Amino acid sequence: MELEVKDMTCGHCADHITKAVKNVDPSATIDVNLNEKRVTVASALPAQDVLHAVSEAGYSPVLIA
Image (cartoon, rainbow, N blue to C red):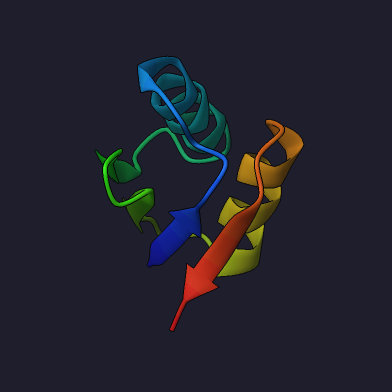
């Protein structure tokens, strides 16, 4: 799944988002593109669970269809 996270502004944000996803799915694969404000997540979890984890970390993710 691909997420747009417009309020991800720096490497610390990217690390925080990565940790949030890993907390709910330790086996998830996460790729962050800070310039495009995109996060690609490969996870067995439903998209809503990943979105919730990122939201709980303080960000505003939007699932890109």
